[in-house]
Image (tube, rainbow, N blue to C red; front, top):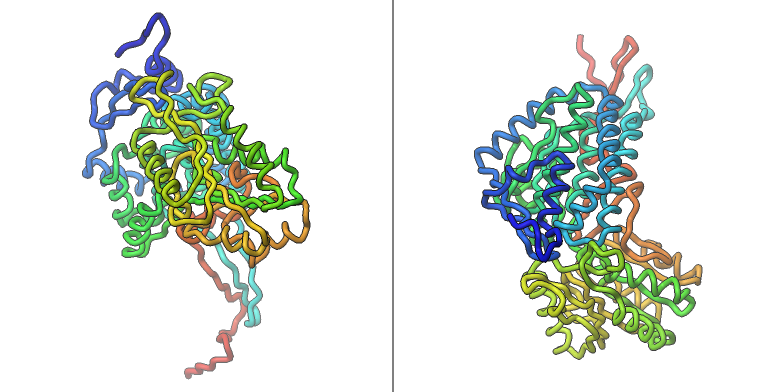
Amino acid sequence: MMTQVNGQKTVSSEANEILEALGVDWRDFTKGDVAARTPITSELIGRIPGTSRPEADATIRAAHSSFLEWRTVPAPQRGELVRILGEELRAHKAELGRLVTIEAGKINSEGLGEVQEMIDICTFAAGLSRQLWGLTIATERRDHRMMETWHPLGVTGIISAFNFPVAVWAWNAALALVCGNSIVWKPSEKTPFCALAVQALLERAISRFGNAPRTLASLLIGGREMGEALVDNPLVPVVSATGSTAMGRQVASRLASRFARSILELGGNNAAIVCPSADLDLTLRAVAFAAMGTAGQRCTTLRRLIVHESIYDQFIERLEQVYASVNVGDPREPETLVGPLIDGSAFAAMQTALNEAQDSGGRISGGSRIKDKFPAETFYVRPALVEMPHQTETVRRETFAPILYVLRYRDFEDAVRVHNDVPQGLASSVFTNDLREAERFLSASGSDCGIANVNIGPSGAEIGGAFGGEKETGGGREAGSDVWKSYMRRATNTVNYGSTLPLSQGVRFDIS
């Protein structure tokens, strides 16, 4: 594998050094049917043998056996394993963050930020391991106690996407482990080396912990067929899947057919309303990051901007200047704010959406591919700002690329209606200093999304809150709050400590 170009280290050789530092020998992955390329230069990082269906089934059986053992370990001890994992992540944050940059194309600060999310959820889950609480419930029967208890559920399947190649796994894995479950992970075939690196760190944590089953956590490498192996296996009672709405429909229906649970985090078509009272300097920064960060390849990316007509012209003029000047380039360079699209299919989808918008009367700024500075096989684009006369079907459809559609509004109620008039319901925000508008947006008749913010953008959620959305976003929740309940089964218990047997609801059943 080539390691030097004009005397400079190649991206692939840097990846190899990082993998070795993380405990993955890249020399084991020079042959295989899953080829991983960096979107930065399109260089081949390596080839990984895909998991066969019989291997996947055997992996899941082994994970089930590990679950039967792990569920008997006290929860605070399970939390100690996750705490140790957090230590491993802290010690290797720089390397893993850099690998995320190389394999997913994120800028350095976003790669590091993703690993920080992993560290944060480990901290959260370790504390949670001592708080897997139930309830004591008032009972109508004398000398009885009624309560609920929570128990481990089983093998937790995790299907993650390329754009958050490690954090989404951690959101699910940390909770599943402290809840007493084993985990089987099907990462994106576009970012398999990030998964191998995380698996190596977890195995190091398990070795330090010293009292965990060997197959507590496993990987399935491959495409759709590996997702199907998880979804269809009766030993997997819950699957958390992140990806497209089309994928989620298939996952949900197949799991429902065998009465298994799904935790779905699917498409987002997130909007922000900019009101006349908004702090425009703050709003400009928030909109720029939310719309252009990760090259528009976040489920929480800002895709629609609804601006009051009284401030529309001045705000859009300033926003156009930011779009024209933002630095698009190699995400490893410190001055870069927007890196490449993941591949050619993402670029093609972007161009299709822009052509449709233009045919519907949209005025487009940006959106072109930058070819002169980068290898021919890469897809660096200028973020697109598209002023639309109204909300078309193209605007209502999520395109996973840096496109921001801009709409005018006159009446706040109309802005909320337009905001909600899309199939997706993930994240939302309003920029206002008017208390009535802010509270209206957060009310039952306001934003219909799972995340609703005031004076911050729709992206950048913290792990302490539940993450997820409604409608075609899938209804699932990950990370904080009481999301842990999704990974456990609930039992309602009644204890009779008296010497009589009163029945509930006044029922009498006397026998001699």
